[in-house]
Image 1 (tube, rainbow, N blue to C red):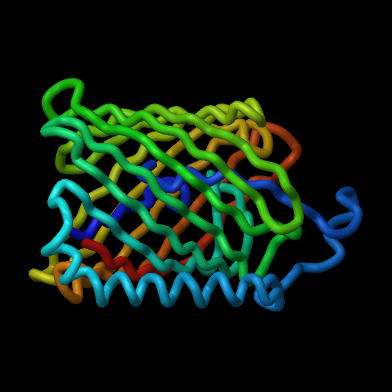
Image 2: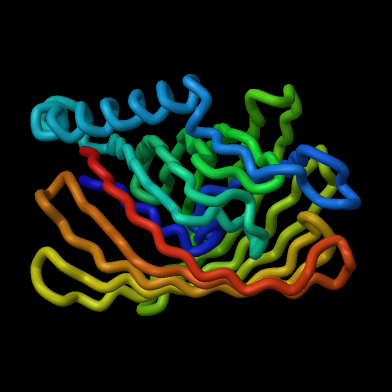
Length: 280
């Protein structure tokens, strides 16, 4: 089956989300502002990463019908190749045009427990304040606690390249309710940066026909990332299923940031994004 994760948080990572953490790096004097915006696409390493992600997704799509017939049905794997015209994390713009390829595996350990692990990456094409590439390795487990209520426990390890060797570890716990609006509440804590985030999200899919649907989502949160801030976000994606194993989406996003400190200004962002997911 295709595992499609609706990113109602982070860009919408629940909070389903890819729970990305970001560092901002600035060229120039931090007080007077950045001296220039860096085009990361000029770096040959970024070109190579984008080519590898494209080839990997195409290969998985071609292979998925064959693999599906041979592997354990309890295992599902998906690869996503996505693009965002802006990369916004918890209300804060991190970069401009950004590719975000990812891969995730899920394993149904028993009737009630699912294990998952994956890799999510951020490859900025147009950088803001010299933001950098990011690699997130994450793993977790979900299991029911009461009827349709599920508990999600996990953690992420973040690496930032190539300008720094810094890394951070973030743990999270969340509750998701399998119902019409799929509400969820998550708590994140970064042990290295000593920052907490609480986020509530919901989503709904409107079927248009057998292959097409409209995905609506929203989230609201409070985070200590880049100073204490409140933020909200909305998204609307048109989804089309090419086959049982492949799906594409395209749509619009909005985020509003309301910081309590002077570190950042109040900001509202509008942008668009698209993705292609293949799996088995």
